[in-house]
Image (cartoon, rainbow, N blue to C red; front, side, top):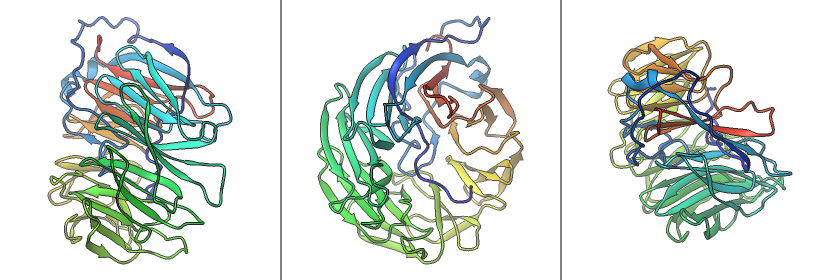
Length: 414
């Protein structure tokens, strides 16, 4: 998986047909834990606009508590009739709520009970694929594309009131429209990138409160819509363009769109660490096929990650990547290899939180040494994974089934 696919971690497609509250594993007799409080929200696809997949604010599910994690409950779902998306497309887990979108709708659930709080149709109930979701400023922002046109699909961004589900605003990616591939929220702004065979690559930055356009570009963006926000810089491009060429990776100021730097050649964006001014690293695959870290403010090379093939998460002290069939941890100060372990499978998805690296196969690793702390589920890989405020949300239903499930794990009583 050397080419990162930004149909961001598939996470939500749902018409609720049953809400099964499945308790912890049989025989688990643990003292009730206090309800989780909202302190470390996983409020958008891939955690932040840098796509880090690392929740550094999580403090409830510590390494010491991993052995006490049980299956709490499941939200069972069926896809919308005739939807072109037959799986969970996108998910956010901000504290006490679970937000999910896909297959022509967006919905909110109570994380403590699995109860549906509201559900609303998106712009085209039978056709939309909703690839990205973000919660901020009291709104739930969903980005996706209609799949009715293979040659020139329409990309739509919609914002819903987080409390009531009422539509607040609806906008295309840019005025020239086109499919949406990546959407993220940072500093009160919605950044979206995508492409269309008929319209070419597109990028827009809008105010989350109103949907008003701040700036846009239909240049410097790859046809696969890769986009990262690192250190308040929007980084796009790389891979191939609509003509099969290799556009440069381009960095522009988030607030204004002013050019900051660019690098030519066949680059591929991987992940960054933080979308705020605390961001220091953007990981990319260079034209020689080596994953390197670039300074997000200058584009200058910092170090390489030897043997790495795909970056799966970026924390404060370490970056995690697949290296062949193994999982490797690298120092974010110099790129040195900290540890390398075999998980029994090659993960396509991971999440870091409070000293634990969760892999899509259900294995939880100690970020300090790579040792297995627990196996939370087996037999299937999660299509989506988020850790927030003492809960783990994983979409683990086999793709062949019609009903989809968001499984919630955590400490008893949460």
